[in-house]
Length: 321
Image 1 (cartoon, rainbow, N blue to C red):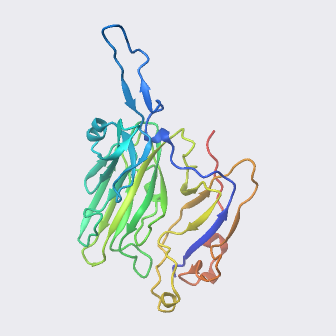
Image 2 (cartoon, one colour; image 1 turned 45 degrees about the vertical axis):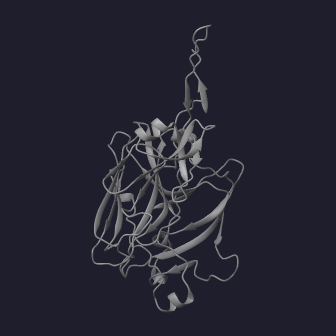
Image 3 (cartoon, rainbow, N blue to C red; image 1 turned 90 degrees about the vertical axis):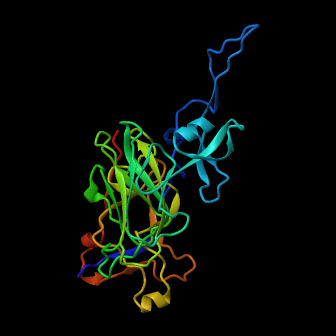
């Protein structure tokens, strides 16, 4: 009998919160860089201005996160400008790609064909991630929205699924379905192994409405924000909540009627927490501060017969020096 668990636990560890750095969004030049070789005399004055590709907020509520580019750069990269940045010299540019698309940079959202509406039809949807350079060792995928058909009663993604190919080790990456909104995933890459692909297949046998918006970011091999190798999820905040894939807090009615979300079967992946030199321990507890949620750790099978090494193991990873 397959046995697995759904969990939502709280962690407390000392580490400053962080987001993906500016180094991934663009170069290190100042926001408004004046060419040092500008020439001025009584007849001529040349001034060259470039816009630093910082993160910015767009005026499009459906796509609020963007990167500041000049209008020409935004257009050439296939983005959409929505709002100004860099003191009005740039446009806040966002990127969306759907089935058959290719992303050439960070800040790209991979969306279902009818986004922001939902889809119900059969599709084989693929996004190619064109790596920025041979110094890219990871992808970070943030599931801003992720709603696919639930797994079958055995926890198998039978009708719909998301699968990553072209990574450093495809077999180590979980195949996902169900509800994963708000979760994230790191994907280890071989910088010389070609461009990875994100594949989402939806079956025709379901009337379930599908919707996804997956933000894709590339992480440099020498970036401080790179997760240790083998970490499918990586938490850098001082506290937070860790949830298994497809975990949604069930109600009493769902538990008694056996309609709560099912844990995905045959998952084996690392969940890692960043450490810092001035902290010595991590405290884990059930995420139930109000005392009203008894289902933060539940089993979908007969867990009593399993040894602890099967139910879960402690792993230790270190960043390469």
